[in-house]
Amino acid sequence: MEKEKLFQRIQSMIISSSKNPKYMSVSTVKVADIFGVKPSEIEKGLQELIDEGRLRKSKITESPNHEVYLLP
Image (cartoon, rainbow, N blue to C red):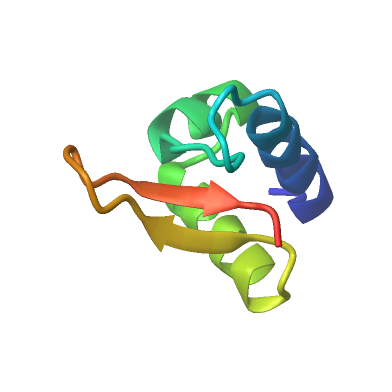
């Protein structure tokens, strides 16, 4: 999985979000299907982007308590 392509896709999803502040709940299964890879590769790529500081991961405090991704 090419990390830059993944970042660009997630970044565009976050930017196009209507929520304020901008964030996006990401289904690794759906993204994996788009890229034709396994969900574990998407999870690994997302974690690498978080470790590099290019994405932030948070958890929504209200129901349904999804994990969401934000731009730093």
